[in-house]
Image (cartoon, rainbow, N blue to C red):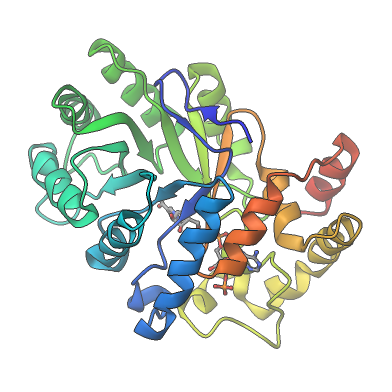
Amino acid sequence: MTDVALGRSGLRVPPLLVGCWAWGDAKYWGYERAQAGGLVDALEVACDGGLDAFDTAEVYGDGASEKILGFLSARRATPVRVATKFGLLPGRTARTLPLALRASLKRLGRARIELYQVHWPDQRMASIPSLMDALADAVADGLVQAVGVSNFSADELRRAHDALARRGIALASNQVRYGLLDRSPERDGVLAACRELDVALLAYSPLAQGALSGRYDSATRPADRRATEPWFSPTALDAARPLVAALQRLGEARGVGASEIALAWAMRPGVVPIVGCREGAHAAAAVRALSVTLSDDERDQLSRLA
Ligand SMILES: NC(=O)c1ccc[n+]([C@@H]2O[C@H](COP(=O)([O-])OP(=O)(O)OC[C@H]3O[C@@H](n4cnc5c(N)ncnc54)[C@H](OP(=O)(O)O)[C@@H]3O)[C@@H](O)[C@H]2O)c1
């Protein structure tokens, strides 16, 4: 497996990142301590299969995700690559970013991380240039290798890119929701702006939080807060059945599941999906997805069905 470049930032990562939102997050994902073994397996299986880059955020489980990732990854002989995020929480401004970054590093047990991202824009709390200046300072201080944004529109992305360029730094990535069941980056200009500016698109929720995995249908819905998301409504799950069946069919022909095919659809030049893994089996499938190649016809067939 060959690492891919995140734009011109100099940071290289595997073609698929492992997402840690569910790690320690009771409020949304219903995490309980009994599930900790699944997280151990997920990290070990992912790293052994070459997927050694993990995406987390200070808000995931109110810091628990960063702590768990830091604790589990410290047991490995070689360091993992870590991306985390600064949230514009109440009371936050660009001036509070260095403090938040140091708190994240402490929870992660690291002196430096590979990617630091602004989780979402909120110009009432912090202007984009002021946030980019704070990120550039973090690079200058040697605390982060590269910087990115998340949930930025095409226009916000351009402004972030230009502000960082004035400091001589290449914006690595914009992390937005993108997968077969949410293709808005293709329509709202975000994918085009990423390509034009040579910024990687980190695609979150590429499995529609599991709605594409084949595990759920209108009779079997998640027991956690995901059930309130539009793609887990009984109507949406019924409507997605032909797509899930097509993913399963393409998977069967290759000896893999629907998830591997949905991930292979999302992986492409300039796009790095982030898949949420909280069991060894999730990570094993993510590793298998790296070997799946879809023909143009198969990609088109899935895009049409979606
Ligand atoms: N920047 C942002 O605002 C933002 C927002 C959302 C997510 N993210 C990032 O993106 C990551 C991924 O997004 P996500 O977790 O929302 O969605 P996702 O990756 O589309 O879905 C994750 C869920 O899919 C299921 N799954 C994964 N692999 C599977 C497999 N091989 N077979 C069957 N089911 C499988 C699991 O559900 P079960 O547990 O039910 O099996 C898993 O919890 C997050 O962890 C986070 O790092 C960022």
